[in-house]
Image (cartoon, rainbow, N blue to C red; front, side, top):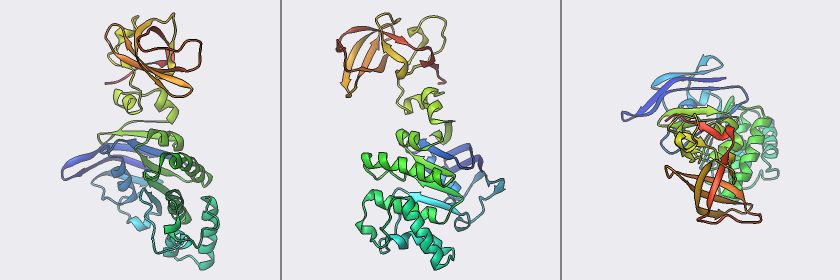
Length: 326
């Protein structure tokens, strides 16, 4: 549906995007995931038409649209700060975009009812925006964008201003709503758990380029580069010498989900840190040889609890040994 080809962009001669290629299928939710300054928001703004394309090509259903004005693109936009009209009621906010397109009063009312039901705010029609919680405001912002039945939904850190508990609940609802309507969406976030929960595919951005784009499962279990692994919190990166055998490589990821305390394991080390996390302890183990450290989780219930200073052995599943590009 959406194709981005060789997109480059700079501000004050400072490159922000470098030859970015991105394809988004019909009905797919693609997350642009990255740290501040990675280029993710600039990429979204270029697709939305909020920034002028300097180099590259944008097509929708094989038709170029980079010269199409923002108001003619038929895209829905949802931002972190809600961008609601404080002097309007919930219903009036939702109807704003529909009204601008000349729909009848009956159609506006029908769509308002449908959207309120969809986002779980039935009966909120006449409420003032100032009476709503942060989560309710973001639901109204989403309803307003959906009411126009956009060809493409674009969300820029939509849950960034919400507390963690509310964000975890709303991200699941948001994903269900977008999928129930069969919409295509581009979703920007810096939060990997949010991306994992909402996306069909995730594009990890770094230094103005897409470092890796894959399904959440593939991205987590098969990162390709040191940067992607570390960005996802997978810091167990060691040299091949730690494993011995015929494995070659300077940067080997030992995936923490494939590491196990095992008296017969081939990797020796010493526990240097133990953090209680409820059902499990998170252990940090300094390895013999090169002194690298790795982290793993082990059940907190058991006959003997591991202690800081314990000499231990680790086994590692074959699938959890992942050579990385530098």
